[in-house]
Length: 191
Image 1 (cartoon, one colour):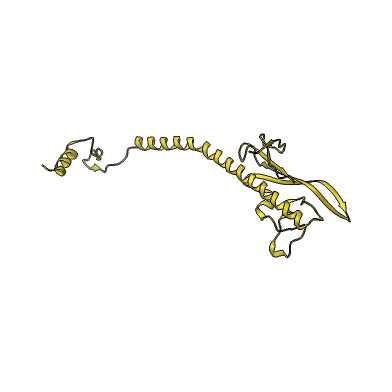
Image 2 (cartoon, one colour):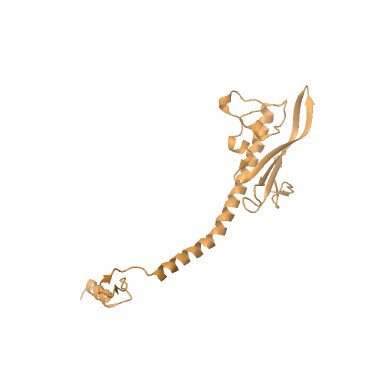
């Protein structure tokens, strides 16, 4: 006997290697087609549900981590935009609001109230589960124009524990700090 004949004989004679399931007969003698039983289907569904329940917490933590990374990058972007704003409008100093850093390029040339430096998704103040605000400090008035010599940008989660765990802050000096409680009391340096 050759190898192929031996394999065929082993498959025909062995129930272990057979992929055929039991055939069922109705009382009238009709043979029902092979298929899964209800119990087999319930077991498979239960296994899938268990695997999904194990994956859900992982997905939530990955989403929070992604939101935090986006918030850190957005704070850096706003810091760079503030430096560009101060360079473009030295009489005004730093911008005191996110909309002042934004603006529609089709509305005309940039102005101190619409510098067209930031894109609209960040100037709205909401991005990737975080709320962004700018507050000005050290204001002086020179020739009727308010000049801000300092600012603070804060990024706090919309829902602490769900959209993010930490709050982030930066100022005119450019270092980013964070608040582990998710607020704007940023005291720890970001590594």
